[in-house]
Each structure stands twice: as C-alpha cells, then as structure tokens.
Length: 541
Image 1 (cartoon, rainbow, N blue to C red):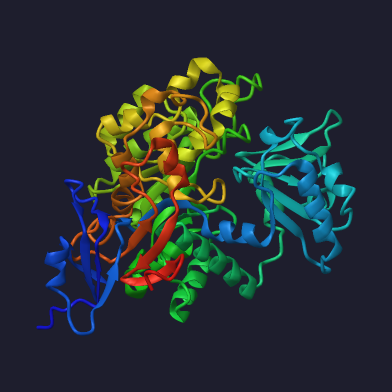
Image 2: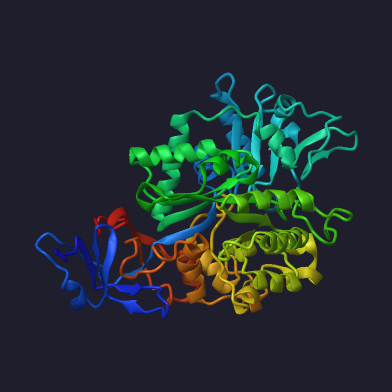
C-alpha cells in the first residue's frame, strides 16, 4: 500500500488541540486527511517522490477555525449593500443618497450595521431622515444586532403599516405621540417590511456568498455554523447552497440551521449530514424566542433600567415554543434556540426540560442555547444539569458592556455573560462572532474571551474579570468545541490522524504572545482538506 503523503508541512509550531493540548512540528496529509502528526523526522517518513514539502518557517498552526454562530447570507449581502458598521448617521445618509441616484425602478435600498449608541446624539433615527432623501423608494436598513430596522414611509406603505396596524407577537412598531409609526420596527414587526423586499437575483446572491467565503478564508475560517435568519432562511436557501457545492465554488464547510418557522420541507426531506464530500450538513433547527439588548427586545424578568415598564418581547407562549421544539426533536433535528434575556433563557430551559423528558432519545441531544447573555445563576445550573450547550459570542460582551449596564443596571450584571461559570460547571462553549453583527475575526473573539476588554483595551483589567476564560479554552471554543456542537468532533476541530486536513496558519503564537496582541493576530494561510485556499504571500501554495 502506498503510504506516501501528498503534502507534508514541517518546521512549524502546531497546536493540535487534542485531549492533552499537545504540540508538534509537522503534519503529513493524504487524500485530504491527516496521516501523521509529530516531529519533522516522524513526518518525513511519509515523504515520497511526488510529496510536496511545505516549510512552515516556525509559524504557529491551529486546526481550521470553526465559526459556531454566524449568518453567511446576511454577511455577504452586507458587503454588497450599504454597510453601516461603525459609521455616523451622516455617513449612512450620504451612502443612501448615492444609492438613490443609481436605483432602478422596483428596487429597494437596503443595508445593515448601524448602531445609534455610537452616534453623537445616541438617539434612534426616524423615517423622515430617509424620506427627505428617497420619498418614492422603499428603504430598509437593519441595526447592527439584526433585531431592529430603520425604514422610510415608502417601506411602511409597501407593508401596509399605518396607525391601525396591530403589532405581531414578538415585535414592536415604534410610534410617536400621535400614534404614527416613526420608522423603527423591532423583530417580527421588522419582518412585515423585510418580507416585502424583492427576491435577490440568483447571480447577485451567489456573488454575496462568494464575497463572504473569501473573507472567511482570509480570517482562517474553514467551517461555519450558519444560524437561521427567520424571514430569509428557508429550504430554498439550502437548495441554493447545495447548488454552489455542485458547481464546485463553495469550498468551506457549512452546517445550516433552518428556521423553525420554515422547517416543513426540511422535516419532509430529513436531516442532511456530510453531503458533498462531508462539507455540507443541514441537521439543525433554529428557534427565536426573543430579540436583542440593543433593540430592547431581549425578554427580561425585570423591566429595563433605561425604559421603565418595558420587559422586551416574548415571541411564543410556552405551549407554542414546546410545539416548535417538539417538531424538531421528533423529526431528528438538533435544536438551537436564540435566547438573550433572562426570561427568554428561563423559558427555553423549561421547554428543554419538558422536551428531553417527553422525547428522551437520542440521549446525546447537544441542544443549544445561542447567546445566553443574561441568565440567572440557578438557570446556569439547570443548563449544566440538562447538558445544554451555551453557544457564546464573546465579542458581544466587550462591544456591548456599557450598553448592557444601561439596559439592565449594575445590580443585575452578575447575570451577564457568565462564561467562567458555565465552563467551571463542565459546559463547553462553542465560539462565534454572530457576523455580520460583529467583525468576523476569530482572534477578536479569543481576545475578548481572555481579557473581557474591547479592542481599545478598555476597561483595564477587564469587564467583570471573574468571568474570563483561559487562552486554551478560548482556542477550543473556536476549534474542537465548535466541532462538538455540530456532532463533528470525530472528523475536525483538532489536528489528529484521520481527521480532515483543515489548518489555520497565523503570524504569532496565540498561546504566548502578549495578551493585548491576540486581537491583532493575522492569518498567513488557510488550508482546506490539504489544499491551500488562502495564502497571503504565496509561501504555502
């Protein structure tokens, strides 16, 4: 039998992320899989006449990064449409003006990423600001959290929203003193307008996905968990992604989680696991239970400190939530639930208790709570007891720390972003950025997890530093723990013989560089199944 490798990588500093967190200097690859991990001498035994030998030049190597919570379609569309991330209101309005000049009949102006907490007046915008620019073209611009939209009068009219419109469950229409819609729509109310946006042309949608993929590879991301967007992500998206794999243009691995609101066809077809050479799976269902802290739609047990009398938005009754989750469980799908507020988390945990009692098989359920941002300590214990996976986005904590204090007050901060409490109790935390909500770099997430500081280094010592996690834990969150959350720890997430040869090569030692440099780590090369998919200077191609 031919035991020669197609590729060997030597002279590196490889963190294998195996059970002992061992290191190695070399790895041999054949047929897209890891053949051997060890010293240069051990791996050179696999060297043949046609083996390509790549000198790692001492660089640090990690398993391919697994992004465990993001939205690929929305990320790509943000790159195509108006990108409001980090921009002032004036800058955004100028981009709307430019878009209006080139708009074609029947099109809408769309964008995403604005955040009023970074504006000078810190006030929510209103429809009149958009009406002055484009009175006859509908405009829909999502807030950075994705749970609140800024629209103009033409968009409201397209959705039939007026002074007598009833708010849908789990949504809110902001109104002025006269009862008129201000142009701010929350969660399911925003969907009333979003559902009216014309379908994206297939060529444009593919371009969005390709732009997103290119960006992921530049950041060392080889696998993603693509969590559903309620009004966009239906089975047609699954078929579209499958088509890109068939054409050979989709290279990264994707685990899709379909919206529970659009799951009928998924249930009829059944779970998809490891299609297209193991690269594509659709075996999870996503349920939204509340909104976001930024939109004040996260469902809280106590009223918002900065909006007395308001508790956020609950999307489902206990019975409705149970029925959605039971349907997923009965049809063999993993359940992932969006829950940010402490009331939403409590409702979800109670639903899981009932679901896992009524449908005990399979016992290895790996049910997930996405975000779990504000959660009571007793409910943390319930999560641990049930074996629920808290899927965390570390950068949400450091981006939103001041806003979190405004929303819930200092007395409740002990319930916010309890990473250490979860891990000390035996939980694993798969890590993600929730892109396009946050910047996609996994090293921003690792930095946030380790320091509890934002990218400007504030606050000194970290925000609620008792909930920091270690570097090793943070790296696991973006590798082996992400793999575990998708039932894939047997094929990826660590650099071990037999696993897929996905590697992320970086410019400094993430375990030993100064703490404040973690956020500045750059990816030199990304290798997918033994093939170089991104190479900053051609050294690894």
